[in-house]
Length: 344
Ligand SMILES: Nc1ncnc2c1ncn2[C@@H]1O[C@H](COP(=O)(O)OP(=O)(O)OP(=O)(O)O)[C@@H](O)[C@H]1O
Ligand SMILES: [Mg+2]
Image (cartoon, rainbow, N blue to C red; front, side, top):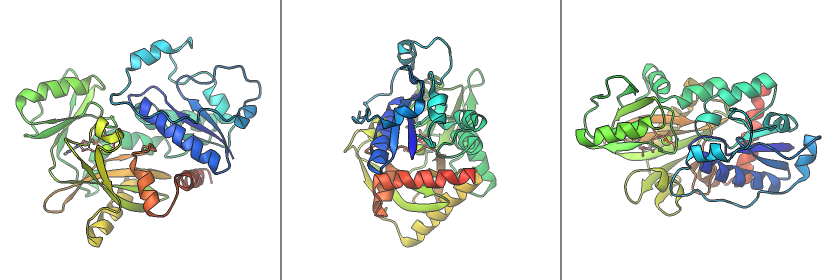
C-alpha cells in the first residue's frame, strides 16, 4: 500500500509523536509498503506536482528519541514559515489524499481529539484509529469519566475546575490534578497538601482551561490494549521512582513494564472485559489503550482511554503485541486492517 505516516503536529506530545511516527514508518516499509513520513504541522513544502511520486522515497528513518522535557510549542510555531494559522502544514491533505491510508502517529490534542478525524472524513481521506466522535469522547476526561460512571465502570471520584471559576475543589489529599484533555502526564501533579495544590492547578492551567481534580488511588497501575474489539495482554507499570510521569514514560530503564502482568487469571479476564466495554462505551474504533489503577481491595478504577496510543520504544501496546508473538510491523499492519473496517 501507499501510506502516509503523519506525526509531529502541534501538541505538547509532538516529540513523542515524532518518535512513534519514525518507528511506524520504518516498520511499515519493512512490511513492504511505500511510506511517506510527514510532519502534520510543517507539511510538505517542496514543490510536488504528482504527490504519488513521493511514495518511492526512503527518508526520515533515523529514530529520534523523546527528550526529558516536552517541547516548547511557541518556539515550534515560530519556526514555521507558512503564512497562516492552520494547525495543518502546507499540502498535508493533498499528500494524504494520494495515499491508500494515513497512519495517524499523532498524540495529544491536535491529532487525537477528533478535529483532524472530522477534517479527513469531510475530505474523504482514510486514516487509522477512531473517528471524530470516539476520539473526542476519549480525549476529554470529564466526558469519559461521566460515561464510565453511568455505565457502572469505576473511575476515581473527580471534579472539573475551569479557569476563572472558584479554583479550590476539595477531593481530599492526596489528590491528582491534571489537564482535562492532556496526555503523557504533561501538566499532571500528585498533590499532598493544600499548599501544593495552587501550584499544581497553575501548572495544569498552562495547558488547558479545564482541569480534573481527582482522588488519588493508591495501588497497582495496569493497562490493556484493545484491537478490533479484542483485549490484548495486560501490562503492569512500575516506575522505579515517583509516578508514571513524562520522564518515566519515555526514558528507557526508568520504569518496569511487566507483560503479561503478574495478576491472577480472574483479574486478567476482568480487566480485559472492562477494557473492551470502555472501548465500546466511548465509541472507539480500530484500537486503543485503556489505563487502570487497582487498589488494595482489587477494585479496578479506569483512568482513561487513549485512541492514538504511543508507538515509541518504551510504549506499551507494542509490548502487548510482542507478548502475543507479533512484531511491531505486524502490529502496524493489524491496526491498518482494523481501521479500514470503518470504511466498509
Ligand atoms: N487518580 C489517580 N490516582 C493515582 N494516580 C493517578 C491518578 N490519575 C493519574 N494518575 C497517574 O498519572 C498518570 C497519568 O494519568 P492519566 O493516564 O489519567 O493521564 P494522561 O496524561 O492522559 O496519560 P497518557 O500518557 O496515558 O495519555 C497515570 O499513569 C498515573 O500514574
Ligand atoms: Mg494514561
